[in-house]
Amino acid sequence: MEPFFCAAASHAAQEDLIGTAGTSDVYVFIQCPQPWASKAYETAALPLRLRAYMQKQPNVRFLLIEPENVLKNTNRPSELALLIYQKQTTIFNNGYVGKALRLASLDDAVDMLEHYFSGAISGQPITTNDFFVCVHGSRDKCCARFGRPFLKYAAKQRCAAGAEDKLRLWQVSHIGGHRFAPTALHLPSGRWYGRLDDTAFLSILAQLDVVEAHRFDLDAWKRTYRGWGILPPALQILERHLMTDLKGFTNRVAYRIQSVQTDEQTKVTTTQATLSVLSTQGQLTVYQASVTKSPAQPLRLSCEMANPTDSYAYAVTRCYPLTSTGLAA
Image (cartoon, rainbow, N blue to C red):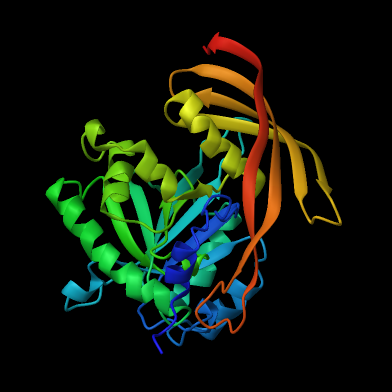
């Protein structure tokens, strides 16, 4: 019998990725040597105090990272990275604000985080792009099988573009959705990706102005796009839906959920919402939309799952502009 890979099964079933982006308000990335335990906070290299702290912060998503090229270096760094990304709190949002701290030791992490969140220290603003690729094989074998080869390819493309100063590549622990491996999270935008391939990655680099704009392929980008993490799942698909109408990317968004109703017989959930979009061209438009969430083909959502379980598909069933202001000031 051939080995089972949840990512291959999901791809064969043509499961849509959209609506699966994480929606955390705060991410904390802690540089920590591998191997990582299946549950990241149980990793042996983490001090017990830090493990306890990570489990007591329900509104913070903790992830372990190592630089993409860590295996090429014979010596461990004298300092460790501690990256904190917090979702913007403005009415119109376009992602996260990042701050960087440096650790002499993982033993210092809890004190540093407590000082940061209390306002005692502010951290160094992050002004580059961070691209986190999941390679967490102890959590699901697909992440290592597909994530590590993709990361090597991504590093070669970044080098060919001469973009080491524009884009940092990181190995990251479980971010969710291993059946979409290779998966990745880009910050500060907060956009999530899965089933990454050569064309899609070049499109991401073009969108980030790392390579020439003509390398951008919207179709390739959209088929690997899991959603914008600043939006709830139902509105993640609406934002992707609007990209075709806007002929490009939304710049800043604001939203309001008006109602959420579930039909008990069909198990279909309908969300009514408005999404206010400020496009990259400065056009401000308010859209009224209905988005449905319906049961889809049962799938094994991880390699270790013994039996298939429900998966879901989203669809925009109604969408029209309420108002448009022309060019925003």
